[in-house]
Amino acid sequence: MGRRQSPIDLAKEAAVMGRYPSLYFRNYDTALVNAKIRNTGHSLQIDVPADQEYLITGGALPGIYRMDQMHFHWASEHTLDGKRFGLELHIVSHNNQYSNFSEAVQNKQGVAVIGVLFHISDQVNLVLKNILDGAEAIKDTPGQSNNIKNPFSPMQLLPQERSSYFRYEGSLTTPSCDEAVIWTVLEHTVPFAITQIERFKQVKDADGAPLTHNFRQLQRLNARPLVYVQDDFLNGIHSASAHFEISFAILATALFFPILRFSM
Image 1 (cartoon, one colour):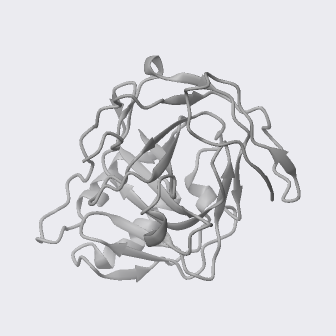
Image 2: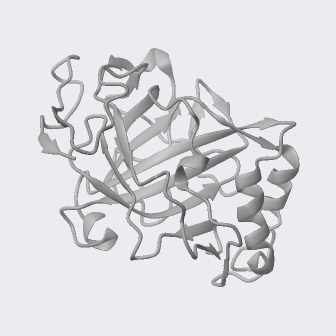
C-alpha cells in the first residue's frame, strides 16, 4: 500500500482553507432510466447505463468526469472531525480523457469520487426506500441485480447545499485500493431513517453472511494536503455555455491540481 490511501478523518484543524469555482453537476437532475441495483457481495451498487451521461467538473477538478456507478457504505467510511455517520454514498466517475474506468484507474487523478454522508433522522428517505425496495429481491444473492422500480435522479441523493466540502487525493477503498482518486466529500449531510440502516445490514456477502457493515478503517493523512472549501467564488454560475478559468488562491504547495480552462 502507498501513502495516499482512503478513507481518512476529515478534520478541519488539519485542513487548509480553499476557495474554488463552483462544482458543476451536468445532467444530475435527469432521471436514471432502467437503472438496476446490484449486490456486489460487498455493497449495493447502481451501475449507470452506457447511454446515460452524468458529468461533474469545476471545483478545481483537473478535467471533466463521467459517472460510472454509485454504491453505499454502512456505516460511513470517512469521519467528520471524528464523527462517523450512518451511511455514505460514493459517486464514482472517470476522467473523460480516458475511454473507461479501467483505464482511468491506472492514472493519478484518473478517478473522481463524490462522497455523500447521511445522518440518522426520524424521516424515511424516499429515494433510498425506492433503491432498497429494488434491492430486496437480490439482497441474499451476490452477483445478482434487479430493476429499481421508480426512476430517480442522482441529484436527489445530494444535499441541497453543495458548496462546502473537503478535497484530497486518495485511493479506492476496496481492493486493489488504487491511488488514482480525487475525493470530494460534501460537508452537508442527507437525512435517512434508522430503520433503513437495518435494511442495508440485511444484504448478504459472498459467504452468505449478513453484511452488517462494509466500511474500511481510517487511513493516515501522511503529508497530503486536505482542503476545506467553505463556499465557492462562482456559486450560482451553472450555465452550460459558461466559460471560466479555474483558479484558486491558497498556499502554493497545498495542491497538485493544474490551472485549466475549459468550456461547458
